[in-house]
Length: 373
Image 1 (cartoon, rainbow, N blue to C red):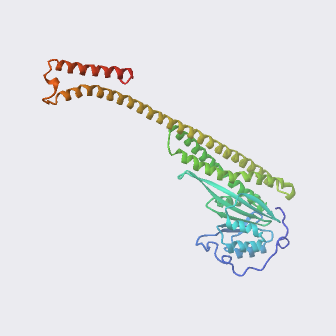
Image 2 (image 1 turned 120 degrees about the horizontal axis):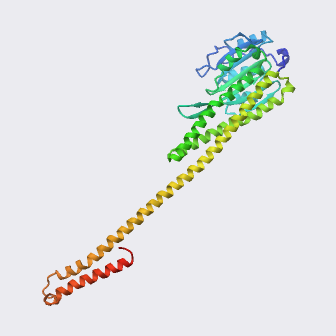
C-alpha cells in the first residue's frame, strides 16, 4: 500500500478506450438520469491539483502526474464506467463484478497491489424509527482510491473535506483515505446504537404496559439487529487483518494508531449490537410469558363468570320448578268440568291447598340439599 513506484511499473497503461458510456460525459451525467461520478479529484503532496470533469480527463491528468493520487467517488455506477476504471487501473474482474451487483457482505480482499474493501454503513431514521443500511465498495491502489456507493449512506463529502483540511495526513496516500473512510463508517454506527438503545427502552415500557403491537416491533428491530451484526462483525476481523500487515506493507505509524482506534470502536459497537440481540430475545420471551398470563387471566375470568351465571340459572330454575307445582294443581282444578269427582267433595279445597304446600316444600328441601338454593 505504501509502494510509490512509477505508474508504468505498477499497471498496464492501455490506450484510452473507445468512448465508453460515461468516460467522456460530464461528471454529473449517467445513464440512469442522476449523478454517477460524484467527484474525481487529483491530489499531490496532500493538496488538490485539479477536479477533472470526466473519467478520461482524470486518467490523462494522473498519467501526467505520476506522483499524484486520484480519488474518484461514484454512486451506483454504470457497467461501462466500472469497466473503464477496471481497464485503466487494472482492477480484478471478480472485484468489479461484486461492485456491480452489490449486496455483498463486508470483506477485504487483496488483488496484487490493489485492495478491494466492502463496507456496510448504517444510519438511524428518527421519523420511521428504523435503521437504514447502505453499501460501500472501495478499490485502493498505490495511487488511486475509488469509492462506489450503493445507497444513501455513507455520505463521504465530510471525509473528503476533513482529509483536504489535513494535507499531512492526505499526503500519506490512498491508505490514509481508506482509514478515514473506515473511521467515518464506524463513527456512523454510534447514532444508530443510541437510537436502537432508545427503541429497546421504549419496547420494555410497552411490554410491561400491555401494548398488543409490541411483538411486531420487537420482531422488526430484531431483524434490523441481524443486519447490523452482519455489518459490524466482519469488520473486526478485517481491521485485525490490516493491523497484521503493518510491518509487511510499511504502514505509517500515525495510520497504525488511526486504525487501532477504529478497531477499538468497531469492537465496542459489535459488542453492543450482540447485547441488543440478546436483550431483544429476552424481551420477546418475557412478552410471550406476559401475553400467556394475560390470556390465562382472561380465561379464568370467563370461567368464573360462567360459574356465577350457572349458579344464578340453578336458582332461577329451582324457584321456577317450585312455583310450577301449585300452578299445575291450580290449573287442573280450574278446568271446570262437570264430571270431575273432586268438584263436589267437601274436603277438595283443603286437600288441594295442602297438596300444593307439600309439593312446594318437598321441592325446596330437595333443591336446598343439592345446594341450588
